Image (cartoon, rainbow, N blue to C red):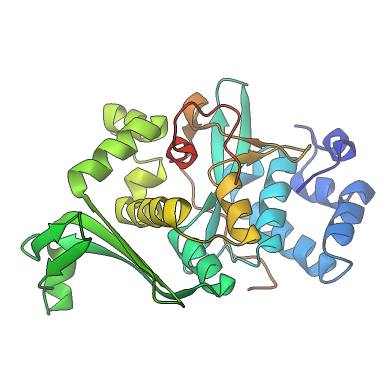
Length: 290
């Protein structure tokens, strides 16, 4: 998804987001990308929501718009209640700027997988203390006895995470990670989370919702390595945890900044993005994302 360089000219610290969105360059770009359908409603809703979120309003305007357009193109909702994707304010300290980052939620992964039509079953679950009887990674069999009382189960410490999918043709793949392995993964690949642990903050999504990020990691590990991905799914993975620049390039800023304490951008109306990043240096490209 490309945001024209002409839009950058209207994106400056002196103008408000509403002024930016009212420019002809922005309106023409939105109408072009949305084929003229609901462009006005999209603009009105986005302006209103940013106006009610001071932290988001301080972000470079083009990055806010690019994230929202990406979510719109994927037919995902930014509603925190739905948890499909988030627009998150981020201090890019390396480049001395504040930007909006696109973050795909684990429910967004599920939504995109379901839409692909390849999957008969798809599930991710936290395994609680006392539930795990045995997991055999050789034949990928998991034996558990779930706590029946949901209230008690929610209050019981998590010891691991399980994810599985079944194709329409019957092929099944499963994955289990211990809580310790997930914690090590989070600390290794998210500088923001490491910073939170060191400073006692809760700015990163790992700090705010560890289970949600763990679910997302399990689904990404499972589907990116063994699953079939639609074009939309590949686009979402490629842009997850990235700042979308005006030229359409995804910049991964987790290692050069910190999250701002703020609520994610809420839903815009109407309700309802597999290439390795250039800066990746790991055999698994998706391990370079949080």
